[in-house]
Length: 387
Ligand SMILES: NC(=O)c1ccc[n+]([C@@H]2O[C@H](COP(=O)([O-])OP(=O)(O)OC[C@H]3O[C@@H](n4cnc5c(N)ncnc54)[C@H](O)[C@@H]3O)[C@@H](O)[C@H]2O)c1
Ligand SMILES: O=C(O)CC[C@@H](O)C(=O)O
Image (cartoon, rainbow, N blue to C red):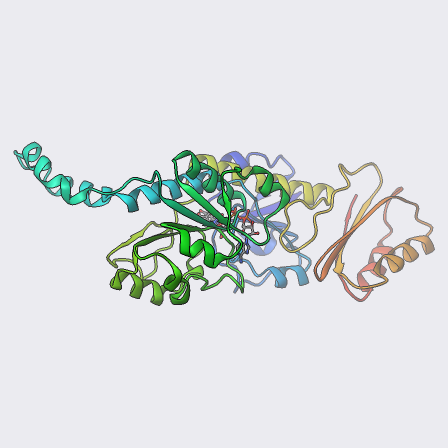
């Protein structure tokens, strides 16, 4: 029996995938698995029992990845599961920036009781006129799951699109329309674009990347969209740019006291992934990853451990070992098993940066003293036996 805890509301269609071997608990300290959306986990203490954290979403900057890795907790996310929801909100954001749709709707609401609303409308509407997206240039920073969808969709709106991503995956490159211009530097993208949208994770080298220096390279009246993370944009520099008119409009999915209420800022309350479809997709993927890890030890879409898959566990025991990526670990594991006269039927070992994962299928059961001995090997972080 496994216990799971949800730190945020998670779509029921995903939780329904947990069968009778799983029970929901409100006590995070007794959970084997935690399913989370945006809840901040950096200050949390993790119990020895916690084996997996599944982020029903893409961004993982709310989770202390290294602390989890050191405690032998595998963290998953759900790549691409909410990408379409975000793409559609980016398109909406560009349209809201291009025309004063919000101002117009607000005006109608203010005058909804006026008897001569129809006549007033025809006089007033020029105040809310705008421009079209067709023919304008869009720069997309980050060509991952969301960036590719946004870039491709924008070409269908008749926009000229530049994409920048020095680390683009082969998979993403295959999906990218051939009409997208490849920006070799982000500065080139800044210079060319009427609209700029950013779709990168919050990392050391991306935090604050949209700052006064970057803005100084952009066209005057540029529209900037940030549905990725607030930290990517230096808010002080953005407020200055909106006030001076260097940036015409800043569309953000992250309300902060500095930016909310500034003229030219369109501030959305983190709704990028808040669609029925995205929430369902994320929940289903997060639960599937969790079950496969708990029951088979397989890792798919982890952000702090390597992916590693040996299929469905067979009749014998499966020993899984999370450990540091250092020399002679495999030799020590197999040596111990050989000494205990245990036969290995299947084995896999994968590494990712400083961490590694070894899966070993043995015939029969795994003796407790062997497990104890494995746990004592220096560099081993967690040993699990799935019987
Ligand atoms: N508003 C929301 O509700 C919402 C929803 C989903 C994702 N997000 C945010 O959007 C981000 C992107 O999501 P995704 O699903 O496309 O992720 P992804 O991992 O598929 O794509 C990220 C892309 O950024 C690229 N990248 C990394 N560093 C870069 C750099 N310095 N310059 C240019 N490109 C760089 C990577 O190569 C990758 O292709 C997430 O990390 C998350 O923070 C927000
Ligand atoms: O869970 C959410 O609503 C937001 C998710 C989003 O920020 C993400 O990074 O996937």
